[in-house]
Image (cartoon, rainbow, N blue to C red):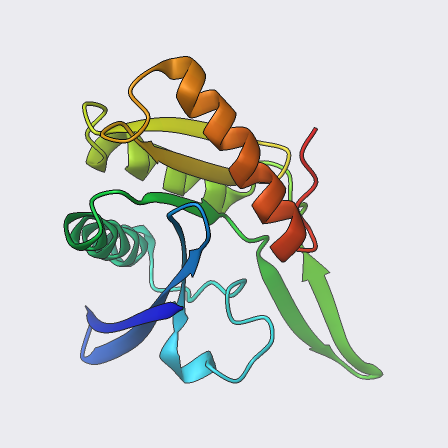
Length: 172
């Protein structure tokens, strides 16, 4: 099941609409993904960066985290995962379009998400695990997995789920 939410962020005189998808998987986990709604039909929609500055970016990511915590209240047994997709730049050149893609290892998005996670996610409620090689972050619900070893076993299950559902994901 996919839960969808839409929000708008002001950038100067423009309102930019974003869509958040919380894809629900077995074992009580949501994977959060978001993108500019105007790019809904683009296969690379999760990889674009709109160049409106860092303040704009922080507002967007903070809003996604607020939505995630809202989902946590509605689904108190669930944990969360997200991947900092590699950024894509498209440049028009005479012979066609040149596509430059960032490495999937420790992407800029991953670094921002991890920083925001450290600031916005209460460690009383979630264990945070990060995987730099896949730019992935998993927040494991402490109300379900009380001990570190339980959380680590659950993390291993979630990494398997990521590998089965996300072609770029390769756990070590």
